[in-house]
Each structure stands twice: as C-alpha cells, then as structure tokens.
Length: 149
Image (tube, rainbow, N blue to C red; front, side, top):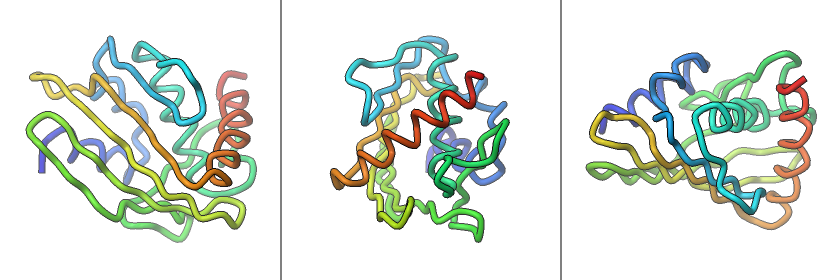
C-alpha cells in the first residue's frame, strides 16, 4: 500500500481530522458527487471531507453537533461505513466503500491522486444509486451548515 493511502486510512480510523492539513496539498481539488463544480483548495476540501466523515458515520443529522464523527476501517459499532475494495497504483487509488444512511445502502468510490510529496492533489467521490445520492445531498447540506456555523 502507498504512504498517502495508509495515512488516509489512519486519519479515518482515528478520526484525526487535523492531520488532513498535512495530507492535502494546498491546491487540492475536491469533486463532490452532488456539487457540479470542482471545489479548489485545502480549506474547502477539508470542510467537505469533514462533513462527509459526519454524514457517513450514520445518523440522520450527519453526526455529532460541533464536529464530525468519522467512519472506521473496518466498520465500528458507531459507523456502518466500510471500505470493501481498493485498487492502489503509484500515484492514485480507488477505494470502494459501502455504508447505510437512513436505511438506504450507499455504495461509492473515493478516487484519490497524490503528488511526488505524497500529498493528495485530487479527491473525487462517486456514489450510487440515485436514492443514495439524494440522501447524501440532503445530509451533506445539513452537515456543511453545521460545520460552517
């Protein structure tokens, strides 16, 4: 496995969101499954990833108030989120995940690319089925408002 993906799994497992500052490149681009434009920069990417940690951790409001609970690897009692397959190359990876939100099974992939320094430069999330996308959209909106406020 690659160092950036090992670190990503550690951050997710330990809910160490502060470590995203070291893992994300300053010019990282985040591609959301529900926002039509790429989100550019470390601050907005960290915000979206933190919101996703909360949303995918379970609970209809997207997680605990004031912060984002994170998914564990493997799935913990507090989270149904679990990575089920990984394809890792020299500078990119595809991590397939499964979770359940409000009774809906969500299947998706994180497509991650990093630079020579081991910092993530591109993070794309793709989700299926449509019912799951609609659920994620609503829950991410609530979580983003909570994190911004």
